[in-house]
Amino acid sequence: MEKLQKILWVDDEIDLLHPYIIFLKDKGYEVITATNGVDALELTAKEQFDIIFLDENMPGISGLETLTQIKKNQPTLPVVMITKNEAENIMNMAIGNQIADYLTKPVNPSQILLALKKILHKREILNEQTTSSYSMEFSQIGMQISESFTDEQWFDIYKRLAFWDIRLNEAQNEMYNLLLSQKEEANRVFAKYISKNYLKWFENPENRPLISPDVFKKRIFPLLDNGDKVFLVVIDNFRYDQWRVVQETLSQYFNFDSEELYYSILPTTTQYARNALFAGLMPLQIKEMFPQFWVDEEDENGKNLYEEQLVGTLLERYRRKIPFSYHKINHSHEGEKLIEKLHLLKDNPLNICVLNFIDMLSHSRTESKMMRELAHTESAYRALALSWFQHSSSFTLFKELAQNGFKVVVTTDHGSIKVEKPIKVVGDKNTSVNLRYKVGKMLNYNKKEVFDIVQPSKAYLPSPNVSSSYIFAQNSDFLAYPTNFNYYVSYYKDTFQHGGISLEEMLVPLAVLSPK
Image 1 (cartoon, rainbow, N blue to C red):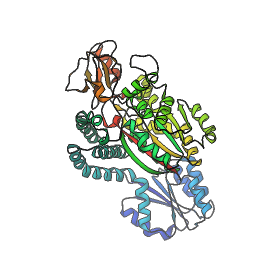
Image 2 (tube, rainbow, N blue to C red):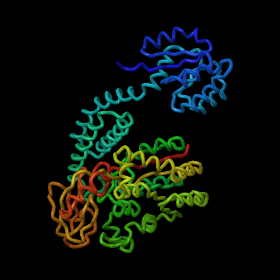
Image 3 (spheres, one colour):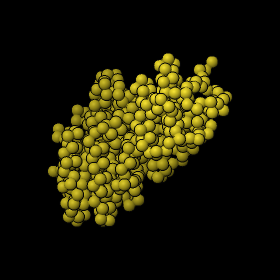
Image 4 (cartoon, rainbow, N blue to C red):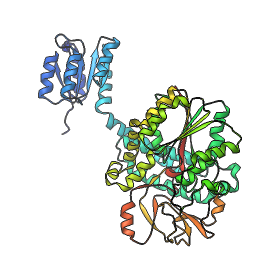
């Protein structure tokens, strides 16, 4: 037999509330009453209650004093304050003591029932409604996946899947596994779409979707032409679902002028996608036009050492002789230094900041058992990213940008995907080491399992050798060598990787924010 949920109702005029108590008992609740704060405290010390309705204005110990004592002893016990007094300071004091809700007399039964549903039954109601809503959308999304022939349709599919990923997780809903299977199907069909269309983007660039090297020309420059002081924040390896949860945190400081998805180029890595973003050029064009700023795969040097210089070449090519600043933030103290000198940057038409934490989180999760435990699922990984943002200098930076009136553009270079299935590939010792793509000569692989580009120049990718080709993992696959295969697979399975073809890696957010 299901246990009745127990209510303690404290009011010095409790006899007048008898009809309410009968109403609640008819609804299946057990109701215990008290007429003063002293009796209420004695009852809470002896019995377990699910919720308390507490009158604010009582003789002897006041409702607020009773509330304070209850919260000291049982901080998680929800208390609903009921009062005739609408004074703002009373409300503030009650809220400061972490009340669950606040009702003003005279109350009616439906208000009481609503408070109970919000506080005691929120999760089960949310779960039930979420199940019903997703069940209705499941077939629609499935049909949309099978019939998606345009980029806009894929953007919409990914947004809907990300929305349900977050919502089903919040509700701890049993249908989450069904969503995972739908995401797998979406990525399978999406990989076919990219394989069929990616090279066509470079044959007919005027008709292609927005990709990494187009962002400055088509999104940043129009804002500068409008006279806006733009602060571009590039959060490395930042997925759309992570943006959705961070966006909620920023909403108290910013209005969102626009939000869209665009394509990260292949390979979806910093070396290729972010350099393309900052240069306004594809990787092969960078290597040919500015060889001093391109680092080849086999080189030991860092792959993104010249981003500031690449931005300079971009502005020069478009004859925009404007002062700009560039900042790369790897640690909180670097963020704090940037915040301290924001006042010196206010006159710059363009300021750029790269935040590297998410990428470092992804790599440390691969290498650290503890980090794997902290971010063992998609939702945990998302929550960890949000926690970092809320408690780091990055959040402070955004608040200061709002206070200083900057127009902020938030984007990334690529996302990442949790990898599950190993795909065998053989290459020589000079083959690149990334798990989601390989570039090298004489690669041996199953053509049905990857997307290959055997003529890299057609995708504006550099060739380390005349016979070099690129292969890209699809879905949640990762590329593994036959040597020490089992160890390799056990080490990298369930880690977050990037470089290949998936909705999570290729479809990345770009949002324009204005201070409130």
